[in-house]
Length: 373
Ligand SMILES: O=C(O)CCC(=O)C(=O)O
Ligand SMILES: [Fe+2]
Image 1 (cartoon, rainbow, N blue to C red):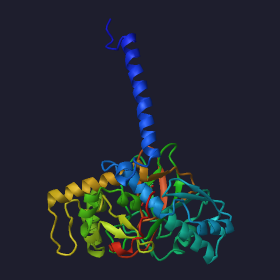
Image 2 (image 1 turned 135 degrees about the vertical axis):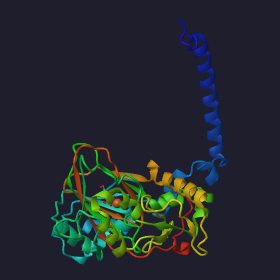
Image 3 (image 1 turned 120 degrees about the vertical axis):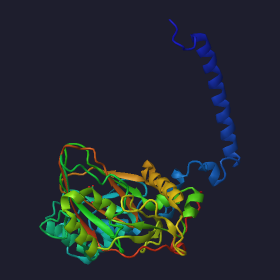
Image 4 (image 1 turned 180 degrees about the vertical axis):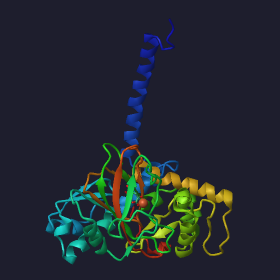
């Protein structure tokens, strides 16, 4: 019988060469490193064909190479908060606090600071009522009601309900409600019913994703806008809503708003890769100043490249829900993706969205990335 494998003698000869080479290469590399010859440059450490680790490293360096600033950690200690960081640059579970116990402004200022630094924050075992959840969100700004179905008893609650008839559909990278002229600052979601397994939500760092883009793509995105349009999303339910209701909705709620693909975070100044893959018309990219379209082919190709970017695991933290847990994400700093992996089970989240401001791009506001080494 022939297995195609090397004979024992040939295998031994091969291994002897490999072991010898590995030892000599390691000592050559060690000598180069000790002499300060290699690796020296950023390109030698983060080769151009693999910029993803560089995106995370740059964002982390900009955070002072620590997940949370000393000042915010000290504030946390005052409130008895403990921090469980999920990624280097994104996502923190705040333990040791009971949201309904707090009526003090200082506490909400603290949470806002953690949100700005960590981009998405989580709390477990809060079990807020609809009204309590709405009141919590209101601490951070005005609220936007959601016009596309499933309100709770409190009209500011949007219920995200999936089951055998309506499997999960939020399984694409997006930042919320980009069809609005002023898309939301952030969203506050609470899990009220969990499937037996799965149903996690993933969050991807839009600042790290921007910093990790190949240079030529980052340059192509400068001054590019795209059209965001909820009609794409509505098309799916149109049979159920009926023509008259859909016509009325289109008349009352504007659609077709232009947003830049690079967005300056209005509070931190950081640049984010900013789009919603379901609302952005993939063929619609255009020059922000002249209005000149990039053309169908170029536009689709660029969007396809961007869609890859948030998928990279390096940028992502993943939150396994528990009932009564809350997530509060900054729509200006992260994209999110709800894993739709629990059919035919039922999963229910309640979401409130906090009003935001018109996206703009002003790269001069971005804090500099310090040298990495
Ligand atoms: O169901 C989820 O985990 C999140 C759904 C979503 O995209 C949202 O609430 O904005
Ligand atoms: Fe969403």
